[in-house]
Image (cartoon, rainbow, N blue to C red; front, side, top):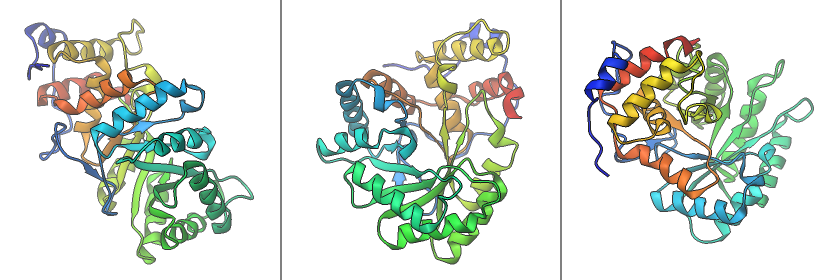
Length: 313
């Protein structure tokens, strides 16, 4: 499909570009992979979330899995709390895979020790039908629990051979740095921090998380990159109208969808960012992956940045 590189005249009138954060010089959404920190694991710049796979049509989910499998080393994100690990495991058992599988440990008071984490990991591996998982996260920090406790369990997960890499989710910048330091003492790099990040929720840019990911060379895995569907179609809401109009104009200029533009902006924002939009149908997964086939111009990028600037806090 031919995709023009620049705005139409109409989109330039309606969506004026201003100077914003620079696009990474080496950014190219059309090719290649992105690293999970310093782990040696590379993934497609776009993954897939599976928190809705448990209740979705299993035939459609299997076709969705085959779609992302054909695209390359796509990261499939699940968690014990999603109840989708068995569904992912069924897909994996359908044939050989190039996918990179990630799941998460659910901590709560009384369930924080390394022994509890390893027991949970064993359960996840059994449901997935794997001996080793590619990436294992702690799903979120707990108040009053030192991150060193989680670090001990994550180190054991790697040293035991049950996890190739480990990460955290929903950790703030200080917590990231502290757990990365604990892990580094054992020779284990922090692979990723998974946080809520989209054009409608840009707090990662101002709360220090994105900066910490750059500093530590850690992937920022963006969940809800389409804001739970709010960035998929035009809206008359006054709260989002300016942004959605801007996205629609740029989408029209590129023969793309609004969601593809929103994903493309995140990909362009920083080379550490790896969005994981959810999909339960193959055509949705294919449409998301099509965002990798082109890139925003600098004017496009700056215009979107301006239209969503108030979302940085």
